[in-house]
Image (cartoon, rainbow, N blue to C red; front, side, top):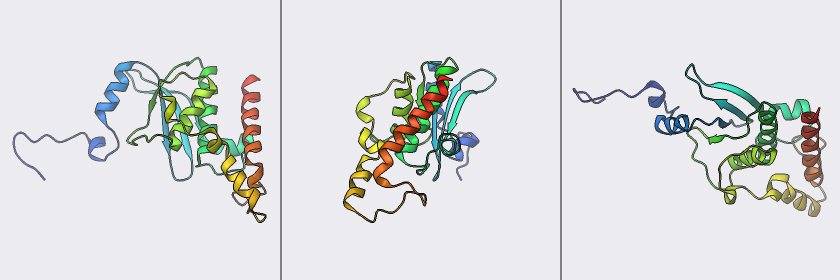
Length: 189
């Protein structure tokens, strides 16, 4: 470890690799709410966070596990389809809470064009949340809806069920659209 009079110990969260303080400062100076997107190996977490002097305040949030429990999603909770639906759900909730615009906060993840992270962002934007972004970064909607899997399943007569459930891969795009309809129906009530 370095020693000497000019050595400065970094903040603990920087040493642990949890926070990029330069990026966080730029986000806080903007004064806009942040669309915080985090992903584990099995789920997506999406929050709309408003900065304040006392600390960040979470206005709305959505978790991909909610798709299974409340909206009947039968697919995986960590793919681009569930990411899109989680972002869509959080976008609808933020509009209901009075938040109309936000900026994207990906944490330490470096966003890559067409990644699942941008599927989450596309879901929030399609829900009506205004987030400054380049639409060329969004993945193709056919990939998000799972139409590429449905095409593969049509050629394979022994297509295995999706996620150990009775969901056939050929019906995945229809199931995706039904879940969007359920989210829209809930937010209307």
